[in-house]
Image 1 (cartoon, rainbow, N blue to C red):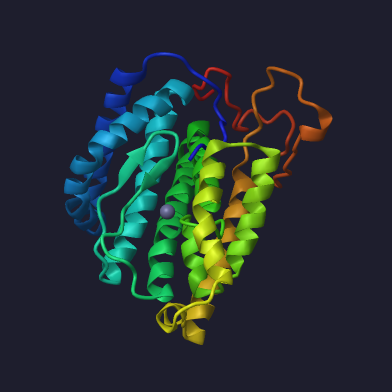
Image 2 (tube, rainbow, N blue to C red):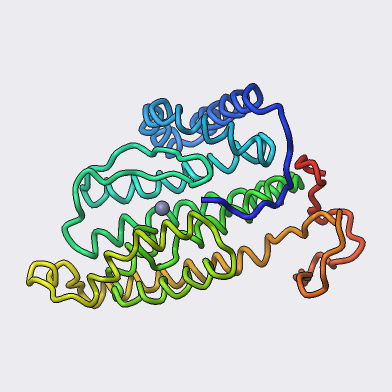
Length: 302
Ligand SMILES: [Zn+2]
């Protein structure tokens, strides 16, 4: 899926730089792995995944790089990978067979379920795994921003938070659509309204596809159901409570995180007063602070 563009377009330099970026990413993973046992175990587990997934990942980085510059592209694709690994871990935890992540340039990434979830509770757990780990990855990017002062990390944090929030929309095959099967499938209607509004105000082919592919599930709400289908949606009260707290808690966290990491667009053209958003930050006044993250128009961090 296409996130907001915080860095502006950048031309050229794509493939060679993208290769370097992937290499650097892998090196970083290995370096981290040598430092923490937990990460080492995860690294060993996911190294084959990185190799198999590498092809589509590389293609994605190359194409994102043409639009936003290779550093941002590499970071963004790594954030997508972290999100997908969250699904993978959740699926393994509940004993569900899944494929390796596959990247689709400008649409995101997905993992294919090799077997259908047995009930809504399992479907919801696999669904929330991605946004949970993905949001942690985005927050880690903001941690890097605070540690290094490099605004690129803040742009990545903001984009990662947005990516995970978008995926929590309760519709169709988006993660949110899967999660709310354990809360109330009627929340799909909320997702339909939100996506319908998005489609009317900002037409986007991806949103259109999501809406179109969600229609069978919307129809399911209104048609007569078999006993087996009804059983699929039976969820214990504690499960509903846990999933509800995780789902709405994560949405609140992501919205707050996006407010905190929002980067003002480069002031190349005058922005109409109605579009100016000033987010007050207590320890960082909005005016004349040289440490404020401001992206230059060419996509390279200032
Ligand atoms: Zn996901």
